[in-house]
Amino acid sequence: MTRSRLVLVLVLLLALLGTGLVLRAGERPAETRAASPEPDVGADVGAVDVPAADVLRAWDEQRAAAYAAGSVRQLRRLYVARSAAARSDLHVLTGYRRRGLVVEGMRTQVLALRVLDERPRRLRLEVTDRLDGAVAVGAGRRVALPRDRPDARTVTLRRGADGAWRVVSVLPVRTPPTRRETAVRTPLTRRLWRRGPALGRSGGEPLR
Image (tube, rainbow, N blue to C red; front, side, top):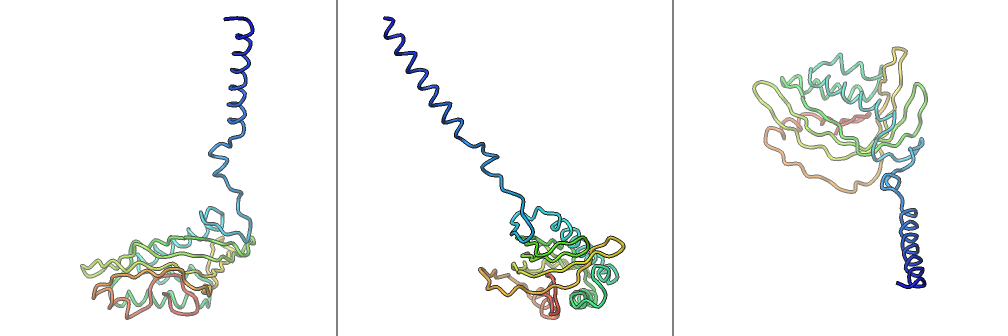
């Protein structure tokens, strides 16, 4: 190979390598492309991965435990005194107790969470969630309750002197539904639900 051809080949190789390096340098790592900034107060949180979500998750777990135990006292402790939401929730629980039933497996699936106001002892959240997996148990019966549909509500919580978060109010967010889910109900589940409101979050009105 002549000297001039050798020089030409080397130039072409360097040019190709340089192009590859430029392309690789211009690419963003997959992790960087997928990353998103941490949500601020007032931001919509699809992944519900903020401290306020931990507060709500812990509260929901305690509520599920109260229903599984059929404990009015446990449930009442999750609300501030004279809360309309507490009255509605206790009404539901006592309705199941009168029929000799407890509700197991309550799992609240939070689909979206918007932090409206966050203070050391007060939280106001806009929550879109649904209840899933609940089973009414008693007298040798286990009846899977119909799956809840997603609903949006404004939930206000207050932190007491004992460090526990309690619900002050739960108010509906008046937005038109995007989709409705039809639940298949057996005769028994129809009787259970006809005699009392369902198990989702409550406000001053009956639970859904």
